[in-house]
Image (cartoon, rainbow, N blue to C red; front, side):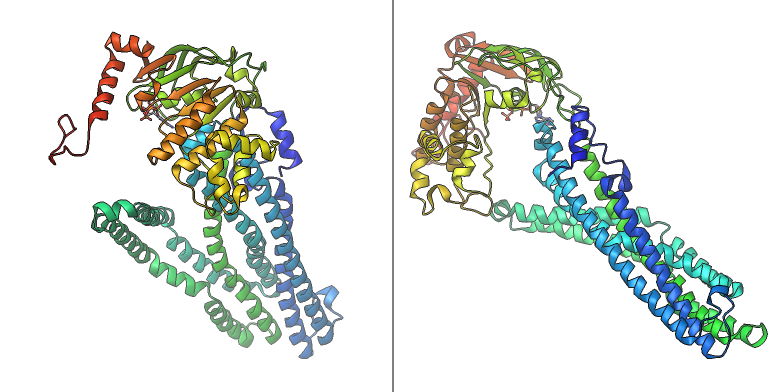
Length: 617
Ligand SMILES: Nc1ncnc2c1ncn2[C@@H]1O[C@H](COP(=O)(O)OP(=O)(O)OP(=O)(O)O)[C@@H](O)[C@H]1O
């Protein structure tokens, strides 16, 4: 559920292409509406730490008053050992209470932040060009929505109160030490400074080494994924040596990087760890303190209190060093989330209008993919009359899918105008365009939900009878009813696995149910077997009846009867016409057709066991 603020932000800045102003830049910026709660959690953590250190000082008061010495702090002067004991106890209780409150607050803020970020990301992704989501890939986007958001949650929940505590610890310890004995405070500060210098030395090349380390780790991950994903190919064509070698090489590189890291930072790191552990501080402060005890007018209770407090200075430094690492990770995650939120949304229509009919027209349309320098389409002009079939034909990479994807606005044209029903698609409200155009994808996604609901996705209010009628038209009803759970069978990643052809027919059922007057088909369907092919062809025939159809044709035989064939070549419209006219013109289409005919004639082997004539070498 999006927050009220973010909803308002979206309404205020339609199509501005900027993510919700609730979120600013950088790590602090992305904490957005939770900044206050997180700040309070840090503050409570810091005050809790200060209470714990003051409790340690109060224990010093117990020792001092037991020895019969009066404490010189005016408002503590009247306290005896019991009084100081009670004060220490009260401060420890307060410290624990504040610590718990800080963590409770930070955990609640983390949950709210996670929810807000997830809904912001989902709402934003619903508004960016669909092409962006496809190009970026579901893997990368789900990593941002899952891992990075979860990483931020963990950072806010567990680390922010600790940041407060770790910053407060050395500061408050030093203030108390100065109040007790400035000479010993200087000694403790000296050891602290030596530790800091060693830490800086150890971290000197940290950024470069860390980048190398991350790159080497990512290379291992990529090699593992490649090895696992390519398993069928590996098993077929390779005994595993090539892909396994890549994995091995990645492991070796990682070992090398790790060795260099350890060598470069090892000694300084170990010195740092030793210096920042409480022991050296205790030793040095105890040695100097003993001298002062003998000759410098220091009393024993003050020395004990100083010894307890001086370890606090050293103790806080190591966690600060680890904190640096948490911060680095949280910053990297925040940056990736902000990059997604910063992808410009599709501009909202300025003067909204609804399509008047089921026609489509490309008027001098050029298009360039965002990250490319060359145009994928160049000045394309053609018109599709309502109720007719138009086939898009051309060699691989000619721009067929790009033409098809511009119609439902996967991207906006770079130049020219694309009209649906006489209206510029940029002026067509998204829901009007969606109800006008249905796209039958090659790559069908089934949700982890019942088959009925997977079909119903096209029209959530459809009745069961309407869903079944669509499934019947898509020739998938008989298959579904033969399943033990029928329409309630769960599909999707963790559900029943359907064949490519069955999934294809579920998509066709969705399109039938949507009942959009314009249909875009990617014809390279998963014709798994002749039976499936026959069923899909029958389903498509039913689906396309009476509609405007634009088909990306890969198998030319299926589009002989198209009302219009658009032949694309390197992003340009090379030819246009009906099948016989284009054959007579003897251009690119005729050449493609001859290749197609030849391909039909090929067999894997001639009857005498040889390679058929005309087969590719
Ligand atoms: N998401 C994308 N980002 C950048 N360039 C792209 C993208 N999709 C396609 N292209 C480029 O645009 C051009 C046209 O590609 P398109 O997929 O439209 O061709 P096609 O005719 O459908 O090819 P095929 O028959 O092989 O599917 C190609 O040069 C391709 O490399």
